[in-house]
Image (cartoon, rainbow, N blue to C red; front, side, top):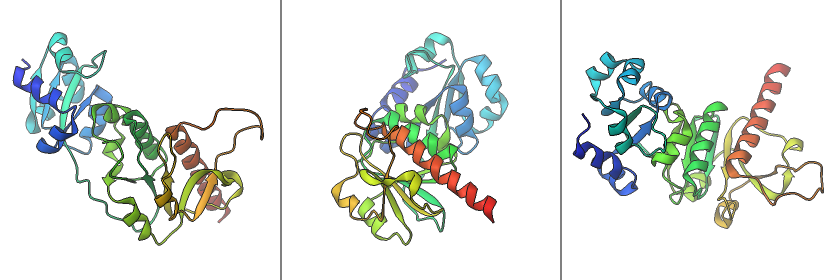
Length: 256
């Protein structure tokens, strides 16, 4: 049975204030929860009996509090219009940024939409980017909407929050950024290390962050000079940029 106190706790985690106070976030759905369980131990799970069996009810019970609930009970706790059989509470990992010794990292400058943020983390996971550093003004990746949009990528991608000026000023490798007046992405040399900065949905990369960018990239529309929309969604743009970086890396490896 899902108690009123448990429902109150789960619902309170919609707000960052309470997530930070108790150090927990909410994840829903068998796929997302299973992915996260590969890296984090849930402290609590409420699930339909058949979903608990899929996740491994015995294993859950050894490390987490488990309630088998009815669809009606789950609906009262869920943030989704169509609950997906399980709600789980996980501990929030360490958010402090630690610079990796090599490889590509994403730097997110004031991304505001949790859905965009979650989709960017999902793209980072797909393209093998293990470190993402967010400005202090970026949406919280542990909000319910962002977590669902990651589709479990938080199990493999470390997301940190830091002063981007301090992070980028200490960068020893290239810092790439996307701009409307940049150089065509497909005509510019791309490396296998450094930062890729993606900016705010409406304003792009902040002026003070732009100062640290060493390589200005443009994702060209096609065909050239054809009337089109003003810009791409930031999550879509991130996926395009990461795909091109990985394509170049593969070409380099094949050429060795």
